[in-house]
Structure formats: C-alpha cells, structure tokens
Length: 64
Image (cartoon, rainbow, N blue to C red; front, side):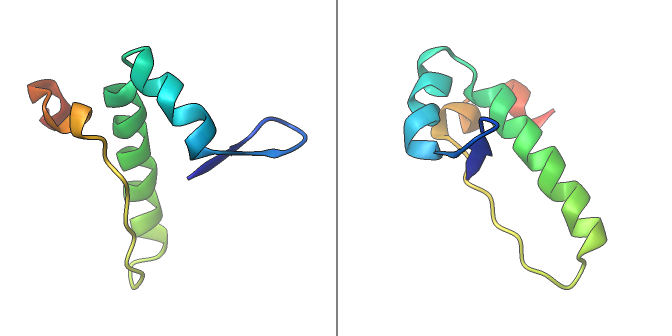
C-alpha cells in the first residue's frame, strides 16, 4: 500500500504508524475496502487482497 505526496511515493511503513496512533485505522480500512470492492467490479476475474488492521476488526462498527 502506497500513497503519493505529489513528488514521491510514501510507503505504508512511513504513514501507517501515524494512522494507528491517531485512531484513524477503522476509517482508513473502511475506505480501502470500499475502493477495492469497486475494483472488483471492474476486474471480476482478478483476486484482490487487502490488509486490514486488527484495530479495525475489533470495532463492531467496522462491520456495519
């Protein structure tokens, strides 16, 4: 998983600790699931995988 800051690629190892530290894991993972679900409609024959944080899975609101 990577994001772009305009000039360069930022690796997950650089930004994910901050996502977790600021309690944003559930929102981040929800957005990731929604984007990958949209890709599954475009590429129905592809196997798509996604990393989900344990912090998100422990929240009951993540599954609603």
